[in-house]
Length: 152
Length: 133
Image 1 (cartoon, one colour):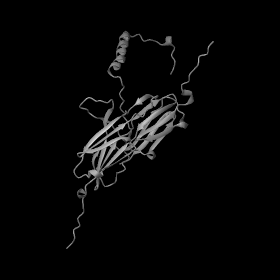
Image 2: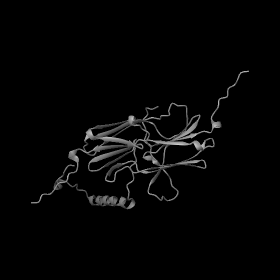
Image 3: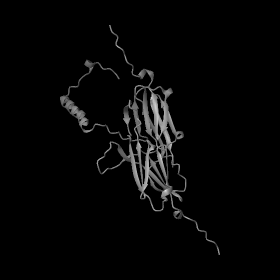
Image 4: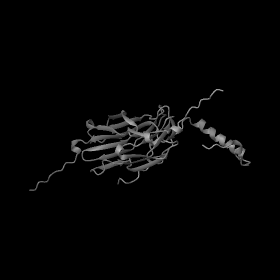
């Protein structure tokens, strides 16, 4: 984050600035009263991802039901993580008729940029119950460090 | 086939008539239903559901599947992006009379539930040979 010296910031001379500030404050207040929990943002691409972090790692979890380990590829390039794969209908080709087909099959590819630098050599990925978990350790320089105050 | 890109599949949320008593979201899992000569196979997509949290019941010709996808996020983690949530998958199917209910089998692999419903013998097509006179 870039630091901006406070008095260098030029305030635009806007007669409505005060009103806009009020409107903004009102908008900020509203969600607090209407919802205590933030709803999940709906995924627009497959697979749906959850990304979380703690002090040491970033965790990327993806819902990839029915995709085998061999059908998944994970790449890290700089700070971009790419999950590629293919989901096959293993019954395709057999002599069957479909009554209902709601599950879609095919290839998928999703890239996400990591919010911090990653130690790319220590990334681990596991799969369980159709959820892929990728643990990306943060690089040493981006880990939070406690600074002790020295007494005079 | 096989080369198409997967389109985003929005999880369908179950429309409830009453008020929910549990804070879990309820979803209708996407299913494929296939049939061959011997059996009808139901394939349901339930990511995050383990064998232990899955409950399948067959009663009065109605097959109900229910599975709970537990939270996978660790307690000390802060969410940055959330596109899926823990919840419960619920779906019911009415079985035809041609299904042999005692022989229904199910398996759960990588978040995919497969239920095999074998057909009763007479329902399986039998080829009748026509003998020439």
